[in-house]
Image (tube, rainbow, N blue to C red):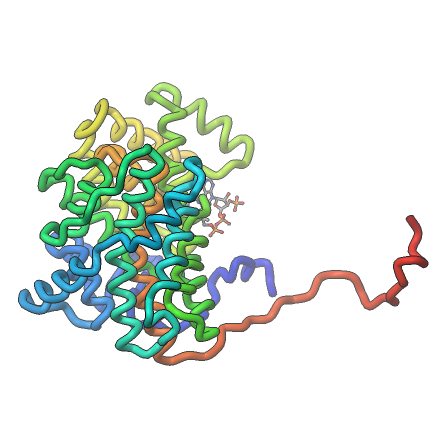
Length: 375
Ligand code: CMC
């Protein structure tokens, strides 16, 4: 492996008909549809349908699809009791990983990898992940989980299950749009993890567990939480330069900036920047947007780096009143639909994903019995 291939950079490792990224032009497509009109005029449910069935739904098809998913929005007793047993300090992404694993154990179709079983399980997973995220959050606060309401959209219900209050239209639509923007993105690390697991013919739940685990890291989904922590640490526009001097001087990464594929701005970032500006101060003090914009401009001036999807999503989630450590679980709520689509694609046309490693260790040497080794 050459140094330039480290991290599989530039390596094409799967065929997909789901999303296409043009990193040079800064464009993203779901099944051939540009992300911009989807984000401006579409919805998360519609984009999810598109990824799973390959076509945009009619109004009737979307109503039926969303109705079916809403009917699956529940918290199984087995999951609730496991979440209750977790230590209160359990990180929400770790709790989610546990919950998805339990969901797999109680689904009678768990090990069935047929298309019909997979798509029904996918519906259950996408519907129950937000319930699990909200339930764990309530439980760690010493509160009981709030029952899902199938009459509400997934985004509206998720905010209600977290806070106990029904959100207004602005907040629900904003969350819905972030879920749409997070839905799928080529062979990112968590999606690749899902496909590797699915390629062993392990089931959808096992594959989604791999996706949740991969997403939790700060170089991937964890970046939205870390970006907000950074803005909180900087605190005000006049401290941006000193912060960047120190961090970049110490060769540390600035969270929410840079991308493996995009050479220009991440097309999702423009929607999130606009939303961050519009929603600034909806919850808490205004000013997050101004600060985020100052960091963005300073990063471009110093490093020529653009922000990625996670950067302004952090400001949006702050404005929606989402607790910091739930930023990445909300990413998982959106991305779960993409993971499921990739697992179904892998199961439909499978070959074991099994690359090779270049060996860089010791040359062959004779084994020495333990009683003959020097202390
Ligand atoms: N801050 C400072 N320098 C950076 C950053 C950053 N965020 N990102 C890249 N660079 C520099 C890096 O130091 C390197 O410079 P040089 O060539 O002088 O050594 C150059 O840019 C290339 O960086 P790299 O780490 O080799 O690039 P990569 O393709 O391996 O990594 C990345 C991509 C996203 C992991 C990286 O940009 C990064 O760590 N960003 C911060 C974490 C982050 O925001 N992750 C979210 C990614 S996008 C959405 C998602 O998946 O959640």
